[in-house]
Image 1 (tube, each protein chain N blue to C red):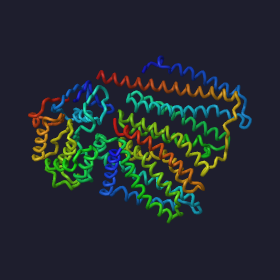
Image 2 (image 1 turned 120 degrees about the horizontal axis):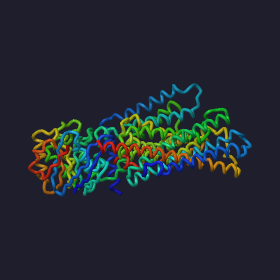
Image 3 (image 1 turned 60 degrees about the vertical axis):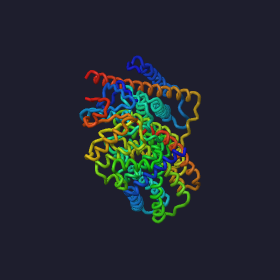
Image 4 (image 1 turned 180 degrees about the vertical axis):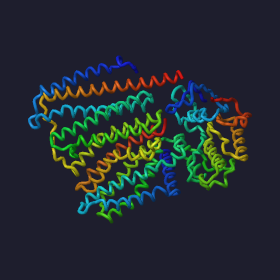
Amino acid sequence: MSTSLRNNGAAAFAAAAALLLVAGTALAFYWVPEDADQGFSQKIFYLHVPVALTAYACFVWGAWKALRLLWTREARYDLESYTAVHMGVIFGVLTLLTGSIWAKISWGIWWSWGERQLVLFLILFLFYSAYFMLRYSVEPGPRRANISAVYALFGVVLIPVSFLAIRLAGTLLHPTVFTREGPQMSASMFFVFCVCLAATLALAGALYLNELTGKRLDQALRDLREAVA
Amino acid sequence: MIRARGLEKRFGATRVLTGLDVDVAEREFLVVTGPNGAGKSTLLALCAGLLAPTRGELEVAVERGEIGYLAHEPLLYRELTALENLHLYGRLYRVPERHERIGMLLGRFRLWDKRHERVGELSRGLAQRLALCRALLHEPPLLLLDEPFAGLDHEGAEVVDEELARGRATRTLVIATHDPDRVAGLATGTLALA
Amino acid sequence: MSRYAADVAALARKDVLLELRSRDTLPAMLLFVVSALVVFHFSLPEGSSDVAAAGLLWIAIVFTALLGLSRSFAAEREQRLLDALVLAPCDRSAIWLGKVVSIVVFLALAEAVALPAFALFFRPVGWETVAAVALANLGIAGVGTVLAAMAAASRARELLLPVLFLPLAIPIVVGGVGATVADDPGRYLAFLGLYDGMFAILSWASFEYVVTE
C-alpha cells in the first residue's frame, strides 16, 4: 500500500470532495426551492442525512475490513478497519450535532427521544467509543487486531437490531410526538440530496485515505528506526 | 518437525525474538538456554501455536492436539482436584482409556495419594509434577517444556529425568532450561538465545 | 457432533463445579439482585407506576448479569488457563458454548430469586416476563461471554466489561420491558428471539478469534 499522498487517491478524493461540497452547498442554498412545510430550516436535511448515511457506510466498511482481517490474517486490514471506524465515529458525532441543531430549529428542543435516528446514533456512539477503549487497553499485536475486528462485526449487527429495538420502544415508551416525514422529495430536491451525499462520501473517503497514509507512514518510520538501531 | 526462518516476535514495542532460524527434526531433543528475557518461553509458546509470529516463518508439523506443553504456570484449575483436572483434560484431548492412563501417570509421578487434593493446596513442586502429567496425558509426539525442573525437589527431578529418558526414542522434545547439564546426556542439540 | 457436545458438557461441568467449590460468584449475584430491588424501591418517587418498576427489574437483571460475567473468565485469566483450553484439539467455540451454558445456569438461579422478590416487592410476574427472562438469558450469556473474553485480554479487565456490554444490552432491555408491560408481548418476545439468534451465531463463529492470535 503506497505511502505517498500523491499516489493513493487521497488527493483525487479530496479534490472531488471539495468540488462536491461547494456544489452541494450552493445548490442547497441558492437553487433548490424551500420546503413547503418547514421552510428554510429544512435545508439542514441536506447535511444531516448524508452525514448519517456516510457514518453507516464507514461502519460497514470497517466491518468489511474486519472480516477480511479475520479471513486472511493480513495485518494491514487492522489499520484499515480501525481508520474506517474512526471515520464512522467522527461522522456519527456530526450526525448527532446536526440532528440536535435541526431538532432545536424545528421544535425548540435540543434532544428528543422520539427522534429515532438520533437515538440510534447515540447507541452507536456509545458502542464505538467502547471500541477505542478496548483498543487502547490491549497490547498492540495480532490479538488486538482480532479482538477489534470481532467487535467491529458486533457493531454492524447492532445497527439493524438497535433500529428495530428503537422502533419497538417507540410504540411502547416514547411515542413519536413530533413526526417528520422524509420530505416528499421533488426531483430537484432529490438531485441536490444526491450531490450532498456524494460530497460527504467523498469527504469521508479523502479523510480515510489521508489518515491511513499518515498511520502507515508512522509505522514505516518506526520500523526503519528499529532496523537502524 | 519444527522449522523457523527469520522468526521475530514483538510485544508492543519490545522485540523479544529477532531473525531466528531453528530446525528440529523428528525425535530430536533440543535444549534452549539463555538468560531471563531472552525469549525461551516466547519461542516455546510460538511453537505451541499460542502466539503468532510478528514476522518470519514458523512451521510445526503436528496437529494441535499432538503437542504437550508445559508453561511457567501449571495450567491447572486450583479449585479442582488433581484427578478432576486430569479428567477434564483427558476428555478435551480425547485420551483413550482415560482412567487407566491417568492412574498410570499419577503413579509414575508419585502423586497417586494426592489425587483427591485440590491443586491450590498442593506444593509448587507437586503442582509442577501434575502439570507434567497434564502435558503427557495424551502421549503427544511433540513435547514443549518450559523449565520442567523448576520448583522440583530431588525426588521430583528424578522422576522427570526418568520420564525424559523413557520417551526419548518416540518423542520430539524442545526444553527450555537454566540447567542444561542435567539433560546434556539426552540432548541432541542446543540453542542459546541471547 | 457428539464429540462437540461432549466437549461442551465437560467444559460447562467444569465451570459449575468451580463455582460450587469457590462459592463466590453466585451468592454475590443473589444478594446483589435483591439489594438492587430494595434500592430501587427507595429510588422510585411516590405514585410511580408499576410499569416503571418493571423497567427496574430489567436493570437489576442486566447488572446482576454483569456481575456474573465479570467473574466468568476469572480463573482462566488469573492462571492463564485459557492457553491450555485453546491448545486442546476441541473446537474453540466449544469453550464459548460451555461458558454460555454455565452462565445461563447461574443467571437462571439468580432470577429464580429475583422474580419472586420482585413479585413480592412490586407487582406480580406473568408468564411473559418469565419467557422474556429466559430468552434474555441466552442473549446476555452469548454476547457477554465473548465480551468477557475480550475484557480478560485487556489491561483494564473488569472495568471494561460494563462499557462493552451496556450498549449491546439496550435491545435486550427494550425486549424485556416490552414483554413485561405491553399488551401484546409476542412481538417483543420475537424480537428477543431475533437478538439471540443473530448474536449467538456471530458470537459462536467469532469466539475463536478472540482467544487466539
